Structures are given as structure tokens and as C-alpha cells.
Image (spheres, one colour):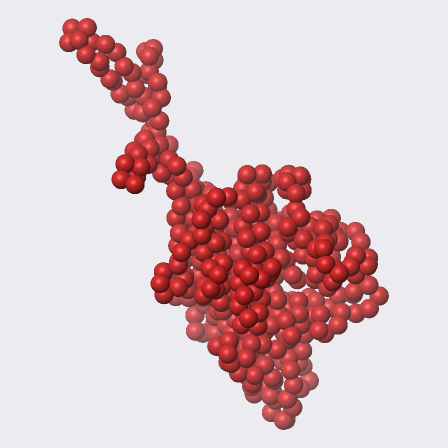
Length: 421
């Protein structure tokens, strides 16, 4: 399947999905350091569009050359012609800036320009559905989006489920739950869009980090329900044995040559500073973000250790930025703002599995029978007679197609809804 990655950062999606067979048609990332990582690791071009902001001076990108995979940069400037040039795209992936919905961003939600990029993402998805035949949307954000006072999550759900004029969905009185499912029908009563979201914690996916994130899948493919991608009915994530292995790996993956690591077994949630959220965020305390060794050494995690805590290959962010090496603060920021690779791998694998199951079912499914009608006047009884046939069109003249049984039922259901509206 072909993917357009947005808010790409250092592209956890590429690391997770390329081994599964996904092809990346393009990226959208304007930040200078992250663009250098995309160029070095994903063969991406320099950004085509830059935000109209002094922080995005063109000279910061001068050393990026070549590349064969387009990086659009600013998501808000992508034109319809840009989308047409991409051809078919199956998946739109992205984690819009989470600062507007996090404690560190003071929870401004849609009042923050970064929060409004979430709606720009939804609008891009609708355009791509028309232009590129988009089938799926994969979106990620912090858990705080579920309790955002501006209802940014409901606005996103409404836009994806209801199209360009979709009204925001209103959460229950208790707020949005950690998991949910939405089904949207078209004017004929048939299922048009399915949406499913689920909150997952990275520590249950074999990385030594507590990181709760909301993942949302939207399916525009009538054969694949979004719930079949994210919903599991046995347990969340991996089994406890896997979690114990991840804690042991955390100890082994500490910097070689140092004493044995004795604290912590699992890191707190990494953020852009290379540390993590403090107690008010509900993610533990500051001791979760220092490494304590048996010889008494105490220090912060290195960029390499943070990469491992997110599931990235070693030194993924250790790239040249012009004539200099990457700064630690740049690497911390890129890693902390990214996604956990094993969680993205799980989502990608489940999506491919759902598509394969749907395609197999389609091949073995018998076609929906077609109903044919013919009207004639019975002169002897002086009345109109209607004949019906199911299956192949009869050879006699006068028969017309009424529709498949599924189409007829959908029209009847739509009529009943209008009657009782």
C-alpha cells in the first residue's frame, strides 16, 4: 500500500512500515533538523513549501539536495495538483502537533494554531479521498486530546465521518472514552466511513518507556471496518512476559562500559527535551528520567538510549546537518516528538491483515443477486401486473434492473429514517 506521511518528524512510520511492504509516496515535514533526517534516512527532498515564519529560513535547508521522494513541508500549502501528481495513495498517516493538547502546551486545543493543524489534516484526507482514492487514515496524538475542552477530537471525528460539512461529534457527559467506534452511513443507508480509536501504552509493545497515545483509524473502504484494525478482544498489546523482556532489555541497552543499571526499569514518557513529563501529567516523577547505576553514577539518558526507548535503529538521528554533526538537543527533540516504532509496526501489521482478510472474502463471496422487474397490463382482469426475477436478466423484452438486494434494502432503510426523522 502507498502512504503519504504528514507531520513526519523523523518518521517512525517509515521504520515500522517499510519492512511490511508499505511504499511511501511522500512526506510532509517543515522542521529543519527533521528534514535532514528524512533526507538521510528516507531519500526525501528538501521541503517544497515552508511555513511563513522566520523560524523556517530557507538557508537552514540549503545543504539538503537530491532525494527522490517528495517532502511537501507545510501541510497547509499542498495543492490539488500536488495530490494528482502522487497518483494512487492508500493511507494518509500523521500525528498532528500534540503540544496544543498536552499538559506542556497548557491544553489550548483548537485555540492553538498547532491544534488547528488537526483540522487541516482532516481536510487533506477528504481531498485525497476524492483525488487519490484514499482508503485509510492513521492518526496519532496524546491522550489529552480526549479531554480537550475545545473538543478537537470530536471535530476530527465529525470531519472524517461527515465529509466537508460534517458537524463535530459531541462526547458523552463523561468525555471521550479511551476506545471507541463510529459508523457513518451515506444517503442510501450504506456504510460510508468507519472510525475506531484506541489508547495504547508503548511499554506493552516491548520498548522500555511508558507512553500512552491515542491511535485513530478511519476507513473509507467499505470492505474494511476500522474496528477490525484496532479492536482486540483478548488483551491489550503484548503479554506480560513481553513486558518483562522489555524491562530486561532496558537494562541491557544502557550505555556499554558503564556499571549495571539499577533504576528505572522503564522510562517515563520522553518529550522533546530528552527528559519527560513530570508528576502533574500523570506519567510518574522526575526520577523516571535519570539513570542510576550500581557504581553511583547518575545521569540523563543519551540520545542513543532515547532512540532505543522509542524502538528506532541505533543512531537513526545521528545525521549531518550541513557541515556539522547533529546536536544532542536536536536529536532529543526529534525523538521525543516521534512515535514508538513497535506500536506503529503493530498498527501497520493489523491494517495489512485486515485488508488481506477483506480481499480474500471478496474473492470467495458470491455476488449479490440482482432483482429484475417487468410491468404489464392484464386486460382480462383490468389491472397492472408486476413480475419479478432474481439473478440473470430474463431474455424477454420489458425487464429492467431494480437493483441488487443490498441496494434495495439500503434504499428502504433510508426511506424509513426519513419517515421517522
